[in-house]
Length: 245
Image 1 (cartoon, one colour):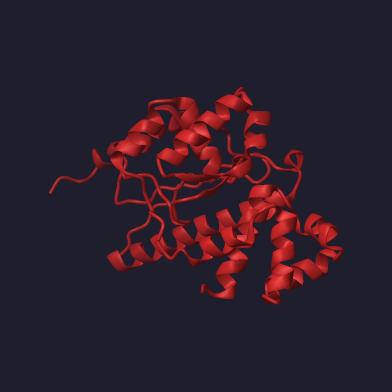
Image 2 (image 1 turned 90 degrees about the vertical axis):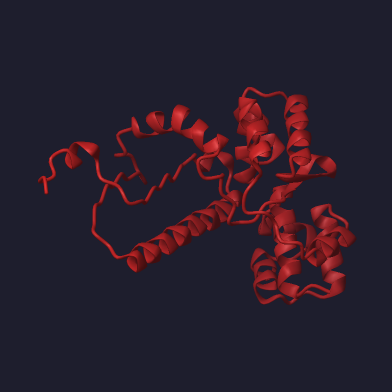
C-alpha cells in the first residue's frame, strides 16, 4: 500500500478538483477549519475518517487508494504528435493550458467563450492525448508530472514565440506584482547550472502559490504569467561592436 503522505496528496488533489476548501470540508464533517488543516498536515487520519472525507469530496475511497497505489511515473513532456494536436486547435490548446493551471470546467466556461458541451468535448480530447484523466462529473486529474514542460523547440514553443512573446513583452511591467529584468553576467558552467536549478525552484514555488490560492474566490485572483529564459547569448548589436581579433 502507498504511504499515508501519498494518500493525503491524492485527497488534496481531489479536493482541489471538486473546488472544496478546508473550511467547506470541515462544515461537511462537523469539524473546524483548523482541525481539518491539522488533520492533513499531521497525517492523522483513520480509515473511518478517510472514508468520511472521500464521501464529502464525492470520490470513491477505492479510487483514492488506486491513485495512490499507482507508482507509474508521469511524463515530464508530451510527444511531438501530441503537441501538434494541441496547436492545431487554439481552443484545445486554451483548455489544455487551463487544465495545467488546475482550472475547473466551470471556471473555463465562465471565463472564455466556450460552451459547456464544447469544453467537455475538449476535455475528452485531452484525455485521449494523455494530458489528463477525465473522471465522473467532468472532473479530471493531470497525467503529467509537476515538472511538466513543453518540448524544446517543439510545436507549442513555436506557437508561443510567434503569437505570445511579442504580446507579452509589449506590456509596461509596472503594475502591482509585475517586474521585468534583463541581467547579464559571465559565469562558469557550474554557476550557470546552479542558477538553472534555482529557476526551477522558482517555478515550483509559483505552482505552489497557485494551488494555495485556488481556495480563494475567482474575483480575488488574477492571471499572472512568469516567462523566464536563460542561455548563453549576446545581443547581435553588441556582438557587432566587439573588437576584432
